[in-house]
Length: 322
Image 1 (cartoon, one colour):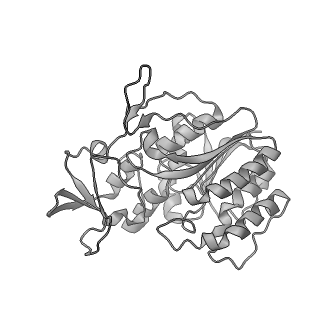
Image 2 (tube, one colour):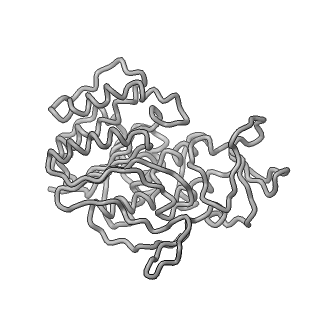
Image 3 (spheres, one colour):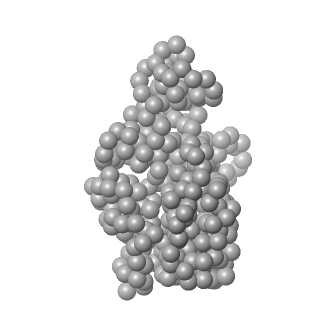
């Protein structure tokens, strides 16, 4: 008997959860980090605090319609040590091992989180959900394409590729590797609702990208310095008259400048939430660092909604309000 429309692995603070709710669906999320669990529960999203790699799949067999998975990106992110690249051959081997019936990831990983990128295969193997949605940093696309081969063998229609969140109304140029699969419908790349420079073609309803300034109600001409007051050089400043650069936990150091010589204020966690397409009053818990990390780790709800709409066959307007 189906209890939930979706099982959300690595559910975090609720990016996918907000999209699930927007589409009128239900879910339960699995997440190990307490601050993120507390945030999600206060926002009305149920959580089971656990390690996805060791938690049993049996309680969910026949109980969920779809599986969502956004494994930890830290082993692969350009902002980290990228030890996932060292572990990549083992992760690919683990995908095949899980597909063949294995249950243990083994040890001796260069980054102990690397194997989580293969964990969704174990869950999909055991649950055989109607649909699947997965998200990670672009460096993981090769792995998603490997998993796509496995899913096609199991009878799924699969699309995998890289999407830019700005193309779906998110005021941020956040690129993510996405996998969408379904056993009951043909899936495809989600139709973009926004584009950088709409050319005004007849019947083309796409809107311009939403700028950081527009999303936050700032005047034009503001710039953002991503290193704050640190005296380091490099590509560390961008105009708020365009979508924000991709958010991470380091967004806590971003400083808004009204002109090049004057620092106005640091970007707040509420502003970061809006840039990730959460509502400004989303109930983030924990330390300031914890809250910025929850925002940076989350899937932007607007992007998640576009992806889920393809997976579940939900109708979605071509252009959504910013």
